[in-house]
Amino acid sequence: MEINRRDMMASAAAFAMLAQAVNPKAFAQAMQSSPTQGTVDVVEYWTRFYDDTVATRGPNGSPLAKKSRKTLYLHSPDSGQSLAYAQNIPMKSLPAISGDVVANLAISQYRPSNGDISTDISHLRIDAAQTVDFMNVVAPLSWAAIASFTPDKQVSKLPTIDQLGYKAQSSTDGQNIKQITLPSGVGKIAVNVTRPANKVFTEIVQSASVVITSALSMMTLPAISVPAIKVFSELFGKWQSHATVIMNGNLTPVIATSTLPSNVQMPQEPMPLMNGYYVMLPEEHEPELKSEFDKLTVQNGFLVHTDAPASDDLPTRAKAAVPGVSYVTLRVYASKTPATGCSTKPATSGA
Image (tube, one colour):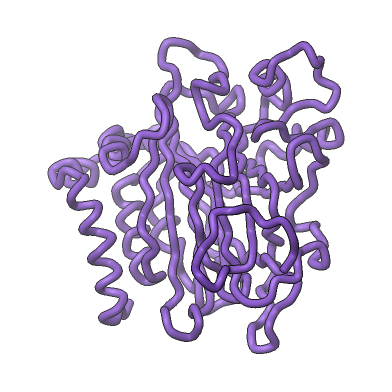
């Protein structure tokens, strides 16, 4: 793989950050051995994760680490509103934003199913990549974040809203929101949740993370070029080695505007990126979700039944809804990139 001088500088910046936070001996130890029983080899998956990200307009066709756990995407415009499969959102529903789009992403909640509950730490990795040059000057960039969820090791039950995940998200909460710029409003996104088998790898991620709550920490890579993030992902796979896969999904094309410039090709099978909640779940859990689909809505990032007793608090309603479904929710705000730079305010209109 050829990396030019600009890519090398971006790589150096990213790995310098990691080198300052991570013990080199821990890296070596993590790569020497890893438990394999009951887990999946994820090395090749992460090695090929960024293949053809820029060269192709469609989703990466590389094999998933665990096909039955493919990541599916749902969308809800806001709390209390109906759910829809994100791929089924009409393109005409997108705002007519001309030019580049800034997207603010905030992790809302992670709720493991009864079958996926564990006392081991789970890692949520979010990747967002540009697929075209920014103003024909800067090479396509990518951003990645790894959130570590630490469950309550004293109990074997679904964690409460305070024990695991964020509370209700605010669009002005800069700590929990990450901005990415999508040239012409197109890019790719992926959501993965795993439980690494190697405890040393978990320690590596946590040592390079910022503590958000007692149950949550996050490692955020700076925006670096796609070739550089590809190198990181290859190393990530080797460090992680084997893992229990909760959900895994390759980079999926997204579009945030209904107005695409004539010189920009439409992505293949794009997923509309709209304001609101995105709910991600493994394909294996879709049957249970479908059986109650019309009875579900999102409240502060959790799936709950629309007819849940008003007397029940949110944690109780969240535990009762689709207990066999693991899911992650993200809060998304997309708006036109301001002339003065990225804005932290949510979009209130189309253009």
